[in-house]
Image 1 (cartoon, rainbow, N blue to C red):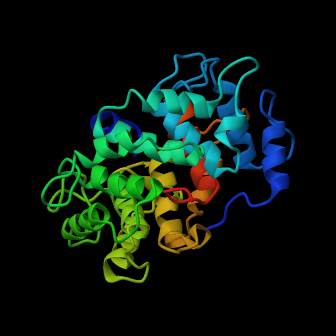
Image 2 (tube, rainbow, N blue to C red):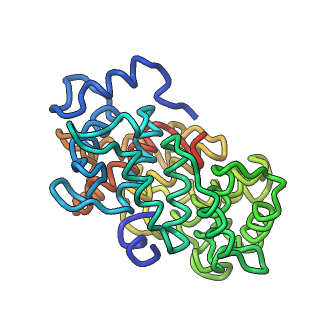
Length: 316
């Protein structure tokens, strides 16, 4: 989810060991000349880490569970184990994720905790899964919302539940019922205005839950996302709005999840989504939220990092 929407609501990997090693080598120092966008982003996130192992919204701030979880997902997507990332004498990013998971109470916090724990190669406590399952409703949703249901399916799959699991199947059925006629999804359900972030989350949840990439709902959802691309190559939170980095990162993840190469997404001769993200990257490796805003740079950069790595959730 992107920027203001989160405050309101709260396939190719970097494949070689050489890439992962190079990314690790720049941690704690300025980005190396010739480093890739992903390596520079990884270095920026690592340098922002606090001694408690967590990540702040912006360097120098206090660690926050939300940023720590998204940071762990981005770091893991880029091929660096969160257990290996720590400031000298401080806790690891994986340890911070584990500590935050023990305090997770809201549905979104529980879901992100499970995803971040597995991405960090940590055990998911049974109590955390039971807490998530307690949020299920009779209609198969989690708290009655599309985004929480999509993340609920992804979290259960990350925790080891199969696509035949009753809760997973129920979540998939709910998501299918909530798809709008234009192919997209709204976080509150069918009939609300379709958004890019919500549609991307629903698509990842559907594919993680066993829905075929070639199925009609998945194809329609992917087409909806692609049709929202702006002339600058990026994607907005809502159709017709200005591009932002987080919605663009979500669009990339939707394309990866549904088997579409993001490098081939060019609407009307625009640049690609990843080229748009690279255009927002500063010399220090951080990624701006948009042309006009540099809000929560650690969070934004972590989400861009997952897109640079061409990964979809849940991370395998």
